[in-house]
Image 1: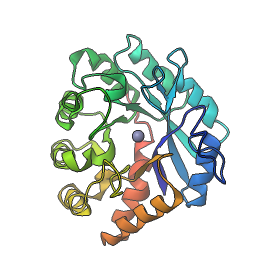
Image 2: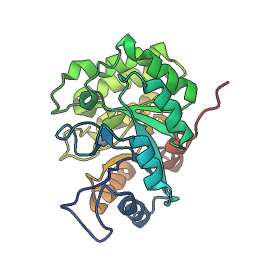
Image 3: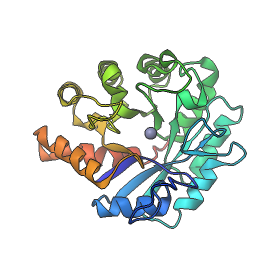
Length: 275
Ligand SMILES: [Zn+2]
């Protein structure tokens, strides 16, 4: 099994130390994934934003891709995604640099970076991710950030998917209950798009998606389009075990369940060869 959507940052959640150390730090994630029987975890680089914009952050003066690559180097069960601000002038070069550092994907968080997802000014960045053969993950679903939902709606992500049809796009949180039907339409209309289940299986979370909706997605587009994820460190051993029970309760074939918990993520973290 592969544990995707895990946020890492230098300090971690220093107020929540547990048996594995401080949640949010690579050494903690490595043990957390191992304890739950996951062979690999996908760590997301911290956001380069000023204090107050996000918990999982690093100073904008630092290079978060380099920080992540160095921080996970000693853990052979963690691979990393860069977290890049697509509006920066050097964003395309930073995609290539992240790949060079061995990172295997790119995360974009529109309300934290305050971008309009389908702004044509961001196209050189998307083209660079496409060229690098890396998957591109967008935060989707509700958010309490000071940025309008409409600017990062699933349908704006869909415009990016149409402009870059070879790009593998992951929509995080499956859009939450509010936008899960938009996610269904996105997946039906764009074969290389998939959705992650981070927080989507937890009734207590703002991104909860009822199981009927998730089963509908599997029925309509297949189990090869959903990827298990957790939004670590905002999860626990118990919450992950419960997530897996819920997926079990869907009554999928072993093969479909393995796709969601392992195979789909295993494919995504393999960079595509481009000429
Ligand atoms: Zn997240």
